[in-house]
Image (tube, rainbow, N blue to C red; front, side, top):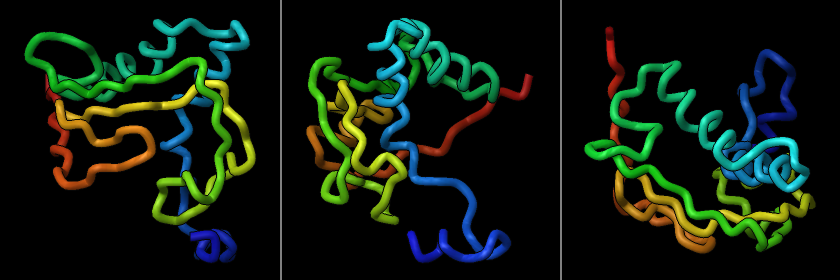
Length: 132
């Protein structure tokens, strides 16, 4: 929460509520001509799965889990308290307008997010890692 973050350094929890806005922030760089869509997929999915040896994820391949995102590159939206999904209820991006929006998210083939609504009825699965 915001109150927890306002503690002293050693008492404040680490990290920030950024997962919800990571892809749309990268898509801003795409709109600016600094990165291509395939480069975003490589950096945000392929490289992560390869670096951490995550089994059957990070690529669209037969037999892999269907972890997919559908984004609208031409649907601007502004981050506000009303549309923040993080449990802490705040974001450093509050007030920022992004040119793209995430419309749907599938995790292991299950639609987990659709047009502003989370479906947390089905839990995600534990990741498996290759040890070779």
